[in-house]
Image (cartoon, rainbow, N blue to C red):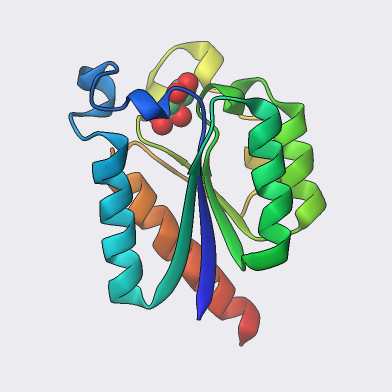
Length: 148
Ligand code: DQA
């Protein structure tokens, strides 16, 4: 069975409440339920974490090494600032998919740069909660291709 860790970054615990015009009305639990529903349909084992702290996110990436075949991560604001998260992804060498609910490229210029993008397999941006499910499918396909 393919095992995938999903990591949500800072402020994503406030989804539903936070800028619903940008991120939509679903809260994090509802998004996680959708992720687990897709995981069941696709025969994936998925563990989900959320943290507002950069170091804790780095620890979750390190811990993925013990268990996961791939990572799906929305580093949220740390996307645009964190060399530590980028280095952690590089260090563990697990195929990683970067997701963003909003289309960061249509927003403020500071959101256009991602420290993470150069070290991931690919990016899914702009599909709201579906960015996560599309990201999960992309991660699954990447692992399947690696195993072929
Ligand atoms: C986000 C985009 C980031 O720029 C922002 O800081 C977030 C969420 C997204 O999912 O669209 O917190 O990663």
